[in-house]
Image (cartoon, rainbow, N blue to C red; front, top):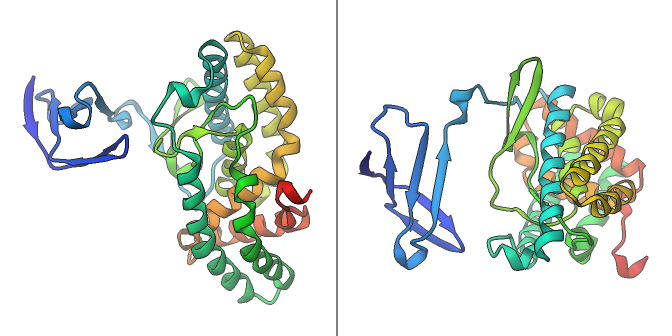
Length: 302
């Protein structure tokens, strides 16, 4: 093993360091890279990076949208995360006391407020540029004024609170096909936090499936996710928590869907200019408007 020094930026526990020492093998393309942190920022911590593309994993085409099989494998991966964290919570207590790296709610609220102030006006302008979206544009305009007061409702965890990835869309997922089945792993865990499982489910369905796919199989995918979550919780000794979360999935859709829309609006520039991505965003807004989701009120007003 040799030691080489490269310039990189690593964020860990709210610290930033550069010129981190990297230890790796002498191969041209090392399978894993280990970053050792300086003593002043946590000398007992390591960052491990692995090139999983060597194992056949690849990114998905965001504009194309996920296939049904890939969407299913992504939700299975989410179910395993949620179930494992629920089981850990049963054994060790509240996870925010166990893991101090979780993304804090106050930082999430500040981030969403920036999304509201930047993304929603862009989304409104996009809708107002279309003659067939008058009602939707008006609903988004009203949401711009109301959204800051909604943040508590949108971001507050519900008991039992598992870990949620919180940015679970196709751009943060890798897939491979193995023995006739699709497998999925998630990247970019910097927003992982206590949350609600439906947050990850709703964001995937609204951001990463074509409108036709979402409308045709979205409900069945939610049911399959719930089945897998309960099965994993039962296997891990957290059957009660799994059943409680499963019961809350459907009622939680309006809140989770609106949260997902705010995330999508925050990166609306990714969709604009690409016809398929624009249409996916447009149809999501139309569907949520039709379901009354855009008119959601804070918990204190219901």
